Image (cartoon, rainbow, N blue to C red; front, top):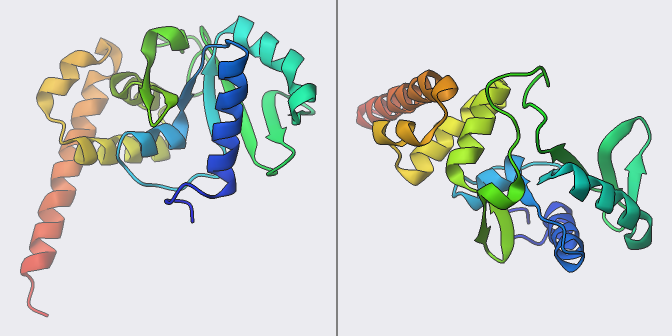
Length: 190
């Protein structure tokens, strides 16, 4: 159900995008749903969106009127009352991972989004940069799988911020180690 796009997470993603588009609020889908948009299929339980600070303020004003409920104690998390699915807002100018200032900040969605299947999604280079800057194991796994799904190589490193290039190369090397492992498994007698 998830990969055919009919599940509650996809429903929420499309509803939020429709509301943001209708209100003229710039956004870019990030996180697991952006990973899916960039050719690596994986599941996720929520939707992550990149907005400017003004976009977040505008969303807060719209939320009650469109069945999006703010989550108490989580200033950037909302729940779609129709589906029960949460969505989080990442704000331009803040920092991925721990939130501590670093060389990579969340960009303005207008500068890094592209249209995929009628939705505004963060472009591949920015997605990989943000995942590497966040530094979680799942993010590194996503980068390895994005490298595989998009047939990326060393040349893609030049599209990334200097601060994450070494981590990108490590993910590329991990992808190659996994490919070698799979090749050995395919050659093993059964």
